Length: 441
Image 1 (spheres, helix red, strand yellow):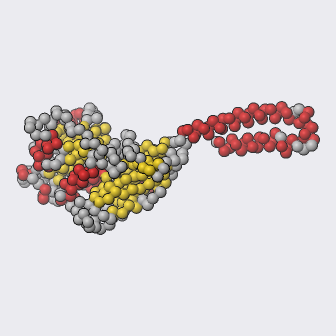
Image 2 (cartoon, one colour):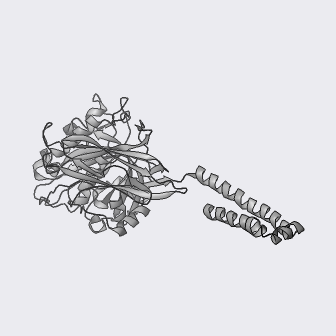
Image 3 (cartoon, one colour):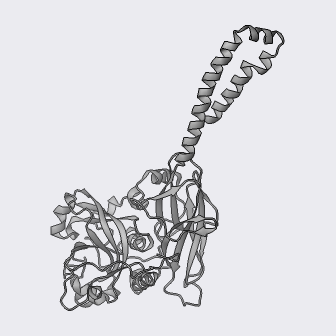
């Protein structure tokens, strides 16, 4: 990846022939589900994301495997299913847009509800959406005449990719890391009723370490969904944004918006303006911050959220939520902190088994992104200071013993008679040694 987030090579290889992939769909049936779709486009590789499903909309072959967590590390394809009336296709099938490849990290089975945690990998670009849908089995989400509820499976196996005479990238979504393909995926979403009022899309290009006014070429990787930062360093967060509905030379279709970057104050300090203006159709914005010079590991967070309120709540994260978020898994905090248990029986991080034919109210929604960030303590500095304290402590004991012996000698009594010992001798040394030890501890 180059400094601007483009691939320096031809990207990851396509899925191999015969490889099975689990298709996991999101929808617009609840703000949380639509937010998950946008998070899948916004988060960098290595981040964690959670979808949830209820048993009736999961393929039968997957149900028992989910209960026993047998499919850990399986490859998944995240997508968005548009259940609106205007996007229905021939035969009542719902349009599906691939978004992102991922790896299944964990399945938490609670009765008939399955919460799936993914580690995000490459984006998934399907140049021909009709051909992709043709590859998906007929029991994918669809409408049946006279039935007020959408039918089908939102989580199921995709068939193997060995389609005679048809290149895999023309049937399934091809893995990609390029910004150009990401823009096309965003445009595919804005062509649907679910996202026509959407103000803008954004994606995190990565977090880069800044050294001597120069920025490192490669972004820092996420490990288990979390950022690991060095102490006393400067970092740059890069964010690309796009408004597919605006003219390339004009203003954003819905006017200027702002994206805010909050960092935990204790060990992360903002160096540039955390209020990023979304004031043009496309751009790359940067935000810099510095880590504290801590000697032990400290945990914090980085939180991106739109200014003002949105359909997800927007506004300011409460103090209690900040405290819980700092302790939570560095995956998406809205999922881990605020599980959608009340609605979980109605559907996944996608569609719902109880999907009604009535059109849901679609409001502009910009996702909130949360990262756990651990500042790794400067252990070298801690060891050096610890060694200095140990030397001072030993010197205090050894030299103090010598002075104690001297104090009892005839020379000490002679100096004491001249009032020199009290001023320059044993007491003076001990006071200074105690001061040194106080600073060390």
